[in-house]
Length: 339
Image (cartoon, rainbow, N blue to C red; front, side, top):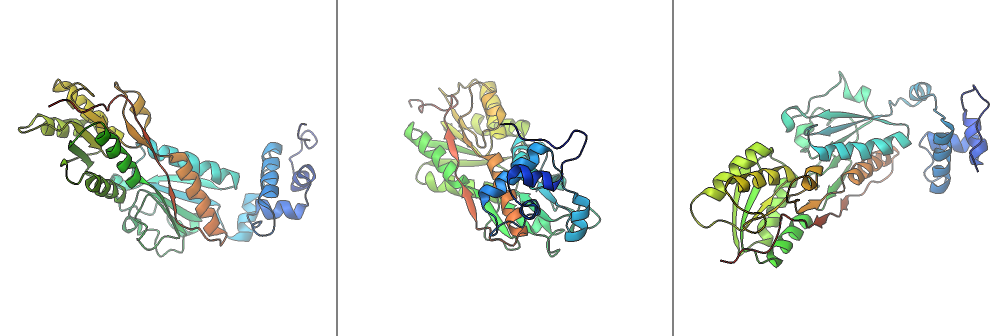
């Protein structure tokens, strides 16, 4: 059955939404005003939102904001706009925000590591809350002490100053990589680590070192770009001494650099050298051989982060969340070469 529409040429009203959804105008007001929790069922709230979307109903946000003293705008702070992972986080966050009449402003931290400057004359006046992905809380001084709710994504859960923390189980991801490579017979490893200071990379390094305790493990750091990774890997793989049989990278971008270095050195992947990445970016499936990597649910991460921020704004608890990750085994990893 098609959704009834208001008379042609008229703008749908909250009364139209209530009539089509089969609820009262008061219920529509509660749901679209984000005051429904504990008073309206989730099913009814979903019906009201779906009906409003189908009818094309848009509340008078300017008037509502004057009444509530809110801008219905959230800020998403990321280290860089060039990394595909953060684009997916934004997509997830923006989708949830749009369902609740919010907008999301995407803001990169200067130089990728911070500190992030207040992008507006007064963040508190222009924003309702802040999501920060893969940032340290000390890099967010412009927003701390401003009474703005701060939800941290992919960050140290012990750091103070955040209303909620959401993380990806990157330690488990690194354990899955090492289990995979150890099962293939590898015992000599190179860790190509990101030189960017970040909690998430520290966790990956610690998990890798713990899982490979008792094996040969060497760590080399690289800038987070293909050219830097290629040069760092070429020096490490072409130097004197025994060559590792597997290279574990903190990121798919670094892994692509290692692939290029291996090709320059005449090494076959995976016959002579296995290479693994992390994140499962689009380029992981675009190179040859395709990268064995760890898939991170970036869009879900953004969605859950925005849901946490909305819960905080509604005065509801937002407990810590850790999302699972998955190993994706592809052609860049294989059995260790015979000695």
